[in-house]
Image 1 (cartoon, rainbow, N blue to C red):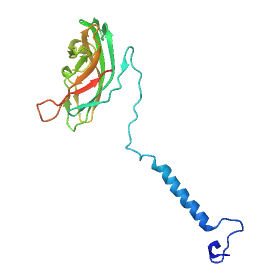
Image 2: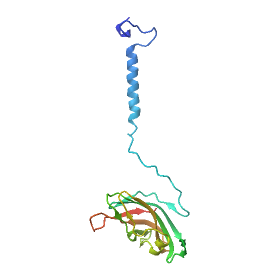
Image 3: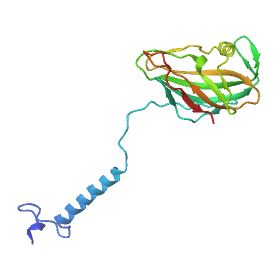
Image 4: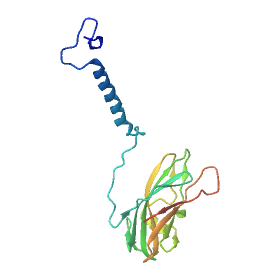
Length: 195
């Protein structure tokens, strides 16, 4: 027998078994092919929190627009409801004075390392026709929503903005204004479509 057919100094291959060179070639190909299969996979990213999906409220439609920054605040519009003729608070039911209420569900996250006060009076609803509206203060109070919440570093806050706008106007987008620490000039606004 040829020396390549020997397994060890005094051991011989069993009759009918493949030569060692063939076994080595098969093992090498298997290793290369398994490396190719893994090559298409991307490396695992950082761990993420699981967010539980929730159903939208009656008459609300989910908004799928990406989140946008304004200063150190990140804004995400979650949903919008329009055409509400009246709303109910803890002690009263109130008709929309201008024709309809528009409710916008908003999630705000402070990405900064300092606290940030958010002035909800600055958060504008823009209608499809180009009109611009501030939240309705009395309705915000009736619905027990914050008017000037302070967000600590890394804090997320979810709430509703209530607008009282003329009937027939369709919500088109939001112009949201965050804050930047250590300066009095406002950052560029985040503009988020509601379609």
